[in-house]
Length: 124
Image (cartoon, rainbow, N blue to C red; front, top):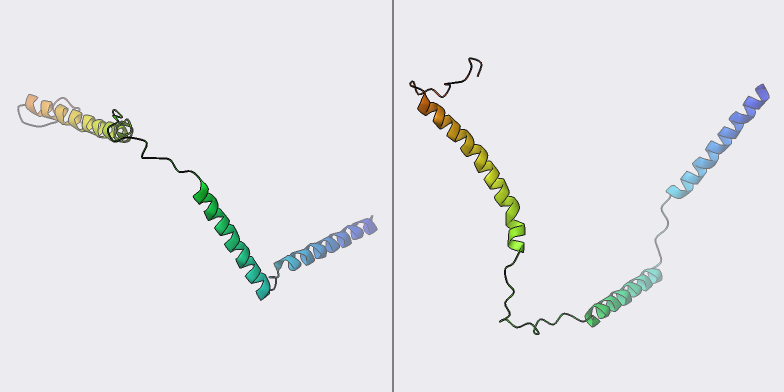
């Protein structure tokens, strides 16, 4: 049984050494490419760029001149889509503020002393 435990520890040590050597091999930075390889890479990039520009130039663009300026489009709904959230937020804020202001004004008007605490408990 002791021999079996010893073999396991040797196997673990060998496995650890193998993993460390693989990690060390991948941690080194490769050498710089030669000047010819750099020039070839730059030429290939220039060719790809020129091909992409030519492909983009060959695409048909929409013809805007076909649409006359006299055409009536109607109402633009995008205005409502953009303005609706802001209008909802402003109306909600005004509703909350004016509601409290109205209640407080009514309370002040009902009391003889002018205190806004009429009708509230002692803790309020």
